[in-house]
Length: 56
Image (cartoon, rainbow, N blue to C red; front, side):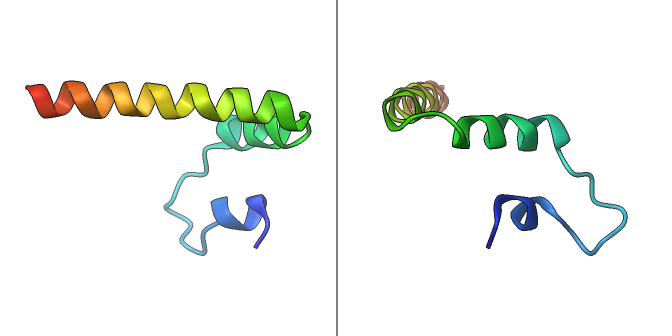
């Protein structure tokens, strides 16, 4: 499955997040080191959010 297929829907009422899709395409074009650094930052942000949510 391609990234584009992942974001497509057969339901006309569903919105496709095109800015996110474009960013994902650009991330996919980066080198492995840059991708890994971005993924670590994303994982850290998600972990922080989950921790804050659990503490509330």
